[in-house]
Amino acid sequence: MERSLSLVFLSLLLFFNDCFFFQVQASQTTPRPNGKVRFKLIHRHSPELGQDPGTTLGPPSSPRERIKQLVYSDNARLHTISQRLAPRRKNFEVKMLSSSNLVGFPMRSAADIGTGQYFVSFRVGSPPKKFIMIADTGSSLTWMKCNYKCHNCSRDRAMLHERIFHANKSRTFKPIPCSSDICKVDLSQCFSLSRCPRPRAPCAYDYRYADGTRVVGIFGNDTVKVRLSGGQKIKVTDVMVGCSETIRGNFHDIDGVMGLGFDQYSFAVKAAKKFGDKFSYCLVDHLSPSNLVNFLVFGEVTDSSVPNMQYTELILGIVNPYYAVNVSGISVNGKMLDVPSNVWDVKGDGGVIMDSGSSLTYLVKPVFDRVIAAFQAPLSKFKKLNLDLGPGYCFSDAGFEESLMPKLAIHFADGAKLVPPVKSYIIDADEGVKCLGFAPTDWPGNSVIGNIMQQNHLWEYDLLNSKLGFAPSSCTFD
Image (cartoon, rainbow, N blue to C red; front, side, top):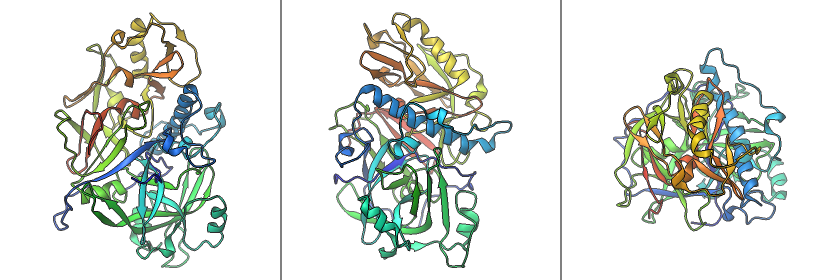
């Protein structure tokens, strides 16, 4: 894969109201290509992203800075999730994000406003142009820095050495008219603007992020070029993309976002329909050597090294564009924790979201308190440290051994069980410091299973059958 990588966040969280519901249906008319599409996912701290002059991505200066960057991004992301999902809850007030919520760490890049942690190479347009984008399971729209008919935009961005998608030069770019039903009906509840000066004028959008960053542009359809596992290049046509001509705020270091959320206009749903209605990803330990890679795949993933997959219900259409799961409880050393059942009810005030754009796992307060209590006895052998790092419990690792730690398991209502390795819930935070990989979040609200908890597993999103498959994996597929 080329060294220039398009940043596609596996989680782009935007401020917009509930979008329409849709159902994935199997395509019977369009023949599916043989093979699968594989993207290499690059973590924001990878050396591959730290090579460009002036970039704020790449390896942090210290382990403490690393964890602070991740938690800072998580805080912004959680706020946006709350903004996104709060309207469906009665008697729940979303607190506005103020500077006091984001103290202690300067804004560095788009990764710090809660859009995600992983990046990918992405080609769009005719002729195709390559971009560095954030892969985001919390975003519906795929968009990139762009110029359509803004005469001064390209000149200003050229001075900043930014990659720009010149939509007016792409033979296959087709703006969506503001008078169309797609703009007036489908997108009106999501993020489109109501203005329509002329029937054929492009449908416009205005995204606003937790820190006040604004992304303004127009909707269109264009062609994305992908490479199959056998080397053949094919085109995915009529992908909805956003041409973002005005960006005010902290969206440097990246070219745009690949939308992998559950929405009929997201790239995930569009590509999955072409490749078996499935997409998968596998994340290695975020502290692993750089020769071990994360990947995102559209199509069937099979490998003899993966044991039989467990499957659980993938709850779609309730908390769009997020992917929810039906958790029934958490056990520590085989003992189920005593928590109220309503904290798991995604149709009520609770529920659990799978989110590769969050690093830590965030538990609503009733669950978090009981998890911490269950770890008190085994952690009493180690000196507790009062550090302002973000995780809820940190301690000195003098004398630490993984075998001394209790086994944690997340139980799903249909019998599946995630048993993560100890390093996925007791994490290295600094030299001589370990922390539980959990942090509290407000109740009522959603708990979030973050990417560290998902590490060293293959995760398969079956959109047609509403199933989530998972199995331990070394992420070493061809």
